[in-house]
Amino acid sequence: MRTVDLRSDTVTLPPPAMREAMRRASLGDDVYGEDPTVRALEELAAEITGKEAALLVASGTMGNLVAILTHCGRGDEVILGDQCHTFLYEAGGIAALGGIHPHPIRNEPDGTIPLERIGAAIRPGNVHFPRSRLICLENTHNRCWGSPLSPEYTQAVAELAHQHGLAVHLDGARIFNAAVALGVEVRELTTPADSVTFCLSKGLAAPVGSVICGERGFIEEARRVRKMVGGGMRQAGIIAACGLVALRTMIPRLAEDHENARLLAQGIADIEGLEIEPDRVRTNILYFDLVRGDPEAFHYWARAKGVLFHRTGPRRFRLVTHYGITRPDIDYALAILAEAAGKLL
Image (cartoon, rainbow, N blue to C red; front, side, top):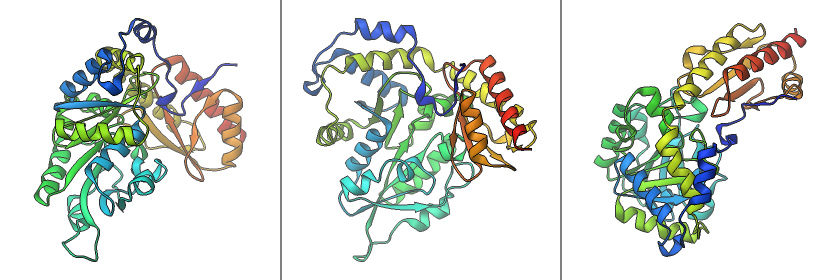
């Protein structure tokens, strides 16, 4: 049976060039700082994002955790959106492992948080309050249709944060999708932030790994925190080798994923019984709603025909395009979605 897996861009498989790079990678013990391939990846990541240094970690969740633990101490507070990944999908790690207090405030549909809302959330100096230490942004914003945050918005948030002595961490899991969608260099999106995490294992199609970038002193402390949470890896060059291929070759092709997402959204808009806002599709993530019928039956029928995606609400579903999804896959998925919706009319 044909399978079109639209659950997430985490399901990407590494292209042949990455598999060959893994085989040929020069290796050493990264905990001792002796893996040349890891060092090369970290240097390239820092250069691309406009930061002084970088650190390879196992995942985006670990990257955000390590970065926030580095910025904040126990009892400190991080201001973040109520729809952001760190608040919703990272197992409460900053609170459970760091004793850090999350202060969620409402995201707008485009993933931004109005500056006045952020300013109002910053705590005054008072022994009754936790100390506001950090503001977290997410770019692109997963729960907000993969919306990209502009350089101007990120700069404005950073200026507000720095005026109050706060730092900014950018969860840039899909930051390269944002850069491609906006037509800017990625450093324009990352330079205002004090730290940024990005994933190699989503749209860039590496099998594993994320990178934290920031000032050299920050990264040195983050390396200690990474070790503390069990993230010290040894011959990690086999991971880093794929990351090097990803950063050197996979970024321009993200535009293909964005185009496929737009085609998918336009097709869904023409299916009776489904509802979508095609104009909200900016990158590779889209959501649609089932207007009538049993959502469980609809989801089951599509899965039975090999079209995989996530249900994210009572009647809402999420689709993500990525490397490995072709134009014929989009056509097949639309045919199955139409078939499944038709069963419920």
